[in-house]
Length: 144
Image (tube, rainbow, N blue to C red; front, side):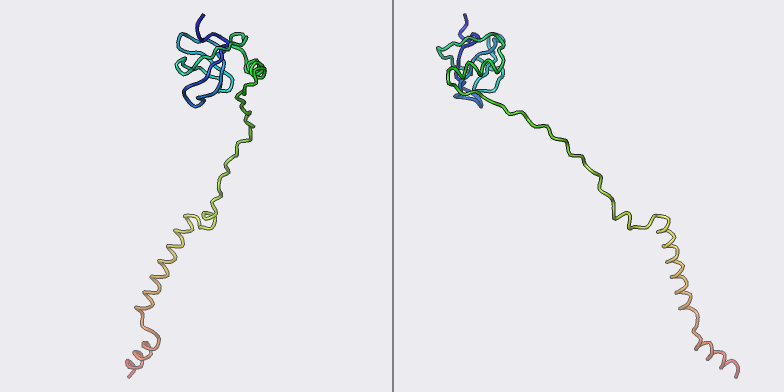
């Protein structure tokens, strides 16, 4: 029999769960075992375990519930995980482009630009044309 048989209680000496009690649930190969108890149920290198003289009766690949019952008899704590509550994934809503609604369409912009150019041309032509007073003066001087 190996030192890390199914049911052997051990103390974890390395990693996140160091110092906690666990039990060997399954032998994977010569170097790895699956443990459960006051640690997360996972495959662990036997170098990270320190065996204790106690052995409890468990079948190979025992469920977490069976390990929990055995640990309760020995008054040892058990690692409990809470089930995650599934929530509806929030849906992203497209933002309405308000700034585009206020703007004029491209065709209207082009037409407005053309109108502005026409107005500028009219203004410059008006500046170049003599005013009515000048015309009267010019006509008065030509009549004489």
